[in-house]
Image 1 (cartoon, rainbow, N blue to C red):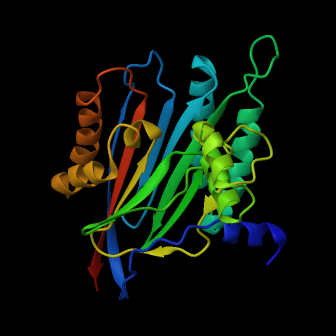
Image 2 (cartoon, rainbow, N blue to C red):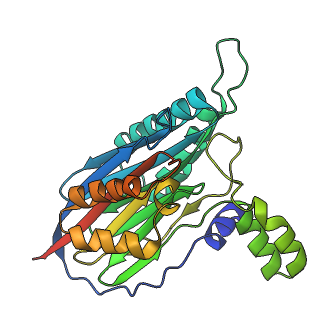
Length: 278
């Protein structure tokens, strides 16, 4: 294992959902999505899905960098990732994700205005691929992926923000508690995103997560989890399943119902895996 792989391995989150033993099987994947502009003037979120009987991909990007820049950044990232997915041939999913991140980062960081000046645009990205009964994911930024299994609801990605860095420094006793509290007001500032140039912080699971019948994967931009608590999100999803499209629409509907002031763009994709034992 080289230095880059070792660093990537260290950055992977291990989730607490118990993994089942799965027999040979055929599978079916259902996908539902919803994206709203909220109270903003522009939609800077972009989403993409492609679904077959035993393989599917979902992507949510949340753009930033001014009205035009954010839109172009998220759209370009989606275009690059979806094209590379369609052209990947026999490439393993983790390797596909690693290469796609580099290409998305280069593309978005190269966006310029008509006068040739850099747009300084960027975007977060979360993506999930279900291949047969295996789940792979990618995250750069602070959009999120959750897994719903029965009564369990687990976030499997980290928010790549300044709070993450502060938490690591505090855990390693490199800063005091007082210093931590004095800096935490800036905790939501992103420390990794597509378009920053030479992006290195990303979460990709090199070993696939074993799915079981009924597992549901939620991908979302921060407009969802900054409006609704995790328990409320879980309750809405579980109430509407197995209709993933209805569940996605319900999530964004309730976001707007609970909005009393400003509301960010909000995008959600739900993927539900079903297995049929042979």
